[in-house]
Image (cartoon, rainbow, N blue to C red; front, side, top):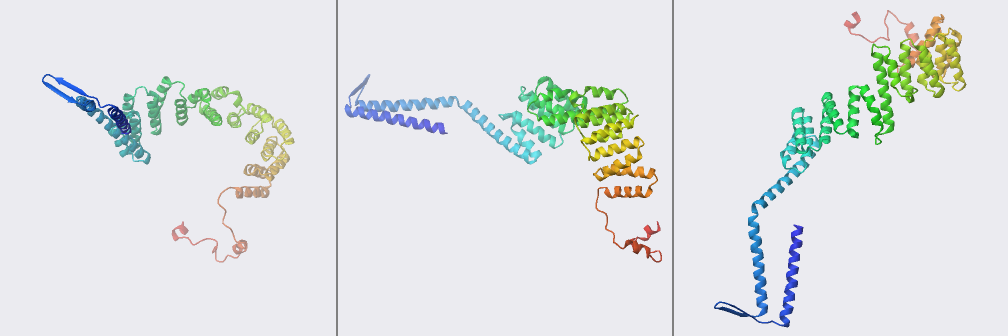
Length: 433
């Protein structure tokens, strides 16, 4: 409409200019014209002739324009109808996306598919309709819409496949999603999001070996957070160690350890898992060497605690080495607990008691009290052991115990007729039981 208005204004301006020019010429010299045709002759001024010729030319122009419009009327109607359908399709797409965002899945599906064949973006219509269908639990309609999306835009294989894989994963159709993503990997081996989605799928299904193989490619993706990648790498190798531990093959654990990059051999969680599994398999000497080498470079409480749990052939030598750490970590409660445990294994009861009491004094907590209680009980100091156990019980987390009255001992001593004022009235059935 704006273009037509401008065109009309230009035409009016042109006519005004030409009219003004004609009026100026006529004013200077009106001229004379004589026209003859057969027995007919006409005499008129030159100005009138110019005016009539102009009117005739204008009428001829608009007549030809009208006739040209009649000839092209079918095509014009077709174009008008196509544009109308496209406007309706755009409106339906917009409304459908709004309904989809608001969670009205059924209405969204109807709107998205109603004029999809006339849409400028049928890919968006059908992919969005596939999401709406899945939300309603219809996998068949979802897959049909995905096929239609591919038919309307065969060059969008990756976009269609990614949407299909995401929907399959969301519906826990992991086998189908894996097949879809493997196909996408063949089409676009370096596609970053395909790789991420595949890694996420392996993580969900617990296929840690396949995820391990993807780690080098994942690290090449500079858009990913390096800290998240490091955490994922640790998770992968810890899971592989646990899988190896559950397997019947003895050598599988060592095989997994060899696959772990040397830069992660002293990562506390990975090394902790590996040495703990070695300890469970009575390979404590190997675990001791690994822990000792790691603690020389990086001090970590979990590794120190593990060192105290090892059943070594020469616990006295391990105790001596561990006591050397006191120079730097003198008041470390975890180290004091470890020294107490090593002293117990070495049969040094007095030293074990001193270390355990020091560990408790510096906040070692329940584990140290349990070790000390067992030692005191074994030494025949039942009262001291009972006190330690009582402190351990009271130290347990949980809701605060009921506050007891200060005169509870006196009230208990003055009970008459076997009535216990501390017991609530119980139903007969409970009392008889």
